[in-house]
Length: 366
Ligand SMILES: *Cc1c(COP(=O)(O)O)cnc(C)c1O
Image 1 (cartoon, helix red, strand yellow):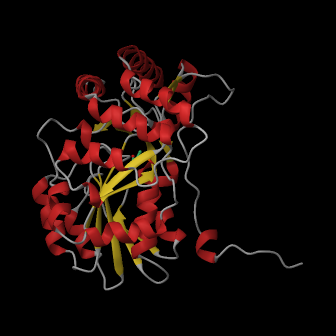
Image 2 (cartoon, rainbow, N blue to C red; image 1 turned 135 degrees about the vertical axis):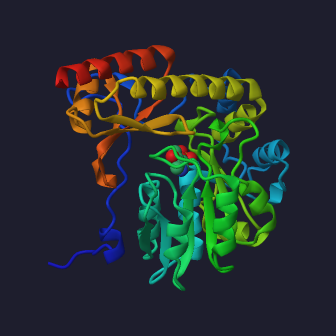
């Protein structure tokens, strides 16, 4: 019998796998698998979200005007050139939807964010991977993979799941080598975790170059993952194209209110950044201190660490052992990383407890 057939490029999608929050046997444990903020959410953002409950019967502001103003004021941007999305995830999809299609190529680095191949395939485009350089973005490898069919290039910076960062000179060099008709999307989901003053130059590029789109999210340092709020910055022409295909009313009233308050609460962001910097460094030192057990933490500038397991203790065994000890981390065999775990930096207690559990697993593996 005949039946509706998904388009072949949709059939080819390997679905996104979210971080888990319960163990195999259903216990709720410390979730260090989705790069959420262990300090929670700004109190002001939470209060603004609660206050928005008085207007649940009304559609949100479709133009997200106050949110765009708040973001623009903080970053020195033109509010008219800010796009907003149901998470920055929507904006990544809008970018491929507006600028790539059947027969086109969408390029990104190996061990890049897992949404990029989905976004490419969704519109019938071909996902193309460039080699990494020891898990980091290799600008030359990306440049070498550009063809006349390349329409969109994604670079997450810092990258997820590796945590690696390409500096301003590298990003400028990449941009200089990209054809003018090809869109460079700089996904800065973790930019707020960089040291103050550290910057890949993406927003400055997006201000002047017609083919650069920067994306940001409220899901990570701002602690608003539940509300799904992201934004992007690009030329007026790029932003206009994205608006044409975004869902109307795509950011909720509660989300807009919470995000506006979150932008204003710089103390919470500073505290979150400082906590992460301290415990990320501590965590990397602890992994290095495990000696010749075959573990290595890829140097990270985000709020997680990719740990490679090349000794007696395998990543899969460590995943199970940590789960038994009450910590859920991320194993990524589907992304070509069967020998690695991505571990979110949690609270002090979570960091200490998880490392103690890991140390025990290493010792027991002999
Ligand atoms: C988490 C993440 C995002 C976005 O998440 P949203 O919640 O959809 O805003 C985008 N890019 C990368 C690299 C991420 O890790």
